Amino acid sequence: MILRGVLFDLDGTLGDHDSSVAAALRSWLPGLGVPFDEGVHALWDEIAERHLAAWRRREISFAEQRRRRLADFLPYFGINREMSELDEVFDGFRVAYQSEYRAFEDAKDALETVAKAGLRVAVLTNGDNRQQRAKLAGMGMAGLGLVWTPEELGVAKPNPAAFQRACQRWGITPAEVLSVGDRHEFDVLAARAAGLRAVHLDRSGTGPHDEPHRITSLRGLAAYL
Image (cartoon, rainbow, N blue to C red; front, side, top):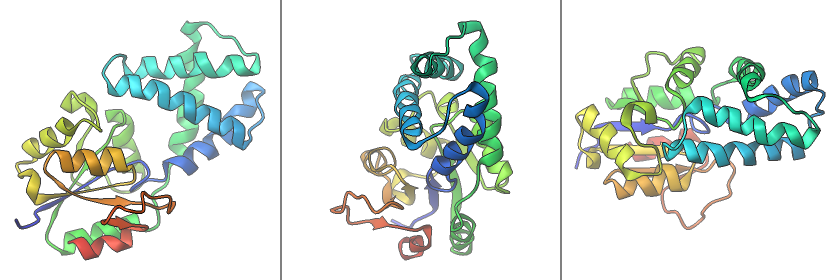
């Protein structure tokens, strides 16, 4: 079947989420009296993923997962805040993260390659709707195409239904869509389970190495268009 559209992930694919988190933590944590190091970064990521997983399962709101992240993280450093204060505390990180968010250097070239191939572009992301659209705008990609989040679809990756609902709203059959993303379980296996084609963007080179459709840069995407 002819390829008609490319469905990109955002964080880790078009935008450099990990570097943005690190830069934000470096600038935000000292104001709380917490020194930044790689161990602190790893702790932040581990706690974040735990509560983001609950949000992806639609068990809590996006704002609540932020509060729970801080409620777990701050006591490691002897910081105790009332739950009513946590939104304001988290806002310091959010502002720093947003200001540090950058596109990967290969992202715009890849989007241009897709456009030149005459294919449609959309984004399927597990982030908060407002925040993810702000990221795209900040990267100069506000007019990229349709953007779908769990808030709009009612389901998050890696549930294959997220891909099925996105394709349904896009008006393109899953077999005519190529999913591109950095998380193998979320962006590749789930996409294939929904009937899409998929390419794994393995920027770190960590695999899985038996994945037959694996690229280490978005510049390798041209071979699949």
